[in-house]
Length: 339
Ligand SMILES: C[S@@+](CC[C@H](N)C(=O)[O-])C[C@H]1O[C@@H](n2cnc3c(N)ncnc32)[C@H](O)[C@@H]1O
Image (cartoon, rainbow, N blue to C red; front, side, top):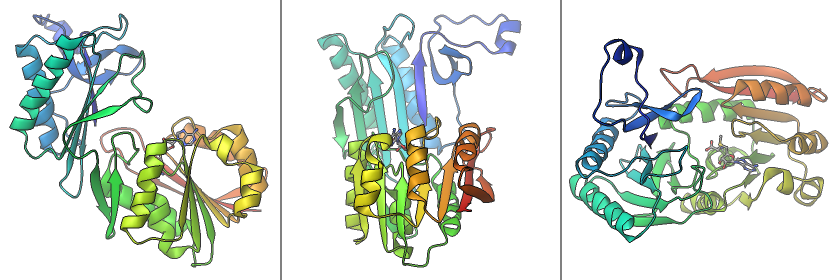
């Protein structure tokens, strides 16, 4: 989960009706849809283990007590920006604090806060921070600093271990991720002889998950650190039939790449919410795999991409997976077969 700090607290309808007044309007919680600068204060989030609530609320209370400033996204000012908490099935726990730091005093404050968190929550195995003075919240281009513990956590699935760094994507719901990957693997219909491409592989989770049923799997992903983790994940699991490449999909997955590495029998693709770039779709159409398994967290962009793939592929099966309980979001898996 990622919680946002803001000095523009969103007041609920009940609070407005009851004319509730707060001393200050700081909040840590979730963005309000349609209001990028407003945040709904969260006391209890039911989507994650309760340790997450205790950590977030302790950070918030410490920040209030020591009068830390909360971020103002319009003015681009304030110290505390974002708190990412990753729990895992292995019991390992990652906490990453994102701050805007103007000088030495700010960095001292951050160190004191993290010292407090480290003492109060010895169960945190990876306590990290990142200084982000940019306008946007992405940290891929920034240096993450280890305050205490490791720079990664491990997840586990079907006896496989997965190393996950702070910049690496990992499905937010580990238990349902296992269900999702089983659907994707079934749809892929592997017999052990196939060359599989796993597009948008993240830390190589799907690539490694299906590798036992394929001849070879090639994973491609944008974030270099995730690709390094993907390689480590193959190594620590004794998997020898995977290859990983880092870069923008449209630049890596080209006709030359296909000619060099071979035409895939199956492509598994799991793009971000924006879906696939037109160039990527055209290269997939050029590659002509027998089957495409399209995993998506955004059915709207998935539908758009399916209509482009319709030039050569028909939809054979659809299976949504509830990865985000208590929300309207689903992860949708579609099997396409070449006509
Ligand atoms: C929905 S995640 C899928 C990750 C992985 N399949 C999994 O299940 O853990 C999408 C991934 O695409 C990567 N990504 C986003 N844009 C990309 C691009 N233009 N080229 C390559 N990878 C990209 C992200 O970094 C992220 O790891």
